[in-house]
Length: 355
Ligand SMILES: NC(=O)CC[C@H](N)C(=O)O
Image (cartoon, rainbow, N blue to C red; front, side, top):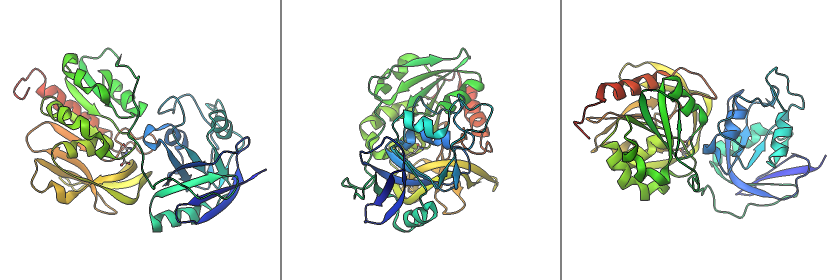
């Protein structure tokens, strides 16, 4: 068993055991996820691209990896830090163990790390650059700078046969968003955000802006076209998609110190006062002060830190959520957001009033 080291940008170091057949140091932005389960969805969610994920739950991997819970075709994380990782996959659906899955995909991981201490360090000093290596090594890169999703070369694809035609703009979408839209009976065309100019030819009944990695402000070159899309079709924005909607209408985003990543984040609906639990994974939030003189208004807020969790447009059929209504991993308490969106789609269908 070879030793492994996690070193944070400020020099704090944590020792553990390194995964086999791995020698090259890696660097990434270190973040922590607090859910007890859901590691497969986390590892394959493109929003985690280039990040090193620390799982705060002490035992990870006990139900293995299955064929149903992939959010994309491969692990997207740069590295993984755990206290204990199960060698055996104890679930009837498991097709491989977590360790074998990560090793096969050449994703380095550390075990036997005091993940509680690492999490405290991230909570105190914030999300930042870190290195994983088999010898003590300080990260060289700049803290937290990631690129938005590299969608180059990806094609426009249509799924399902439904009557409502939804265009899902892909900033690095989770498969479960597509699945939820198909479950609602939609026909869904996935369009890489770099191909957003093609949207009008597709004549959609509604548009969904997906989640995705990186700083939402890096989408700036696409915002002028996005504005015409938002003014033309009922739209639902999820996570990065929500942040991008705010930016399009002149709002601003800011970075949280250590983000929200877990499966039990309480969110309040400002209209009804109702609180529901949500699945979350983000570093950035919409800056509430930036919304004062624009046509978007907060409709949901985070109960723990009062950050903006959702927006509604005052006259256009636009709805957005910072949390993940599709869940995966996490509670399905907010699935109704898709119903609200489809209501916007069906009530405005055929109306050319704002087209
Ligand atoms: N899940 C997401 O879409 C994340 C959005 C953005 N990359 C953030 O970290 O805030």
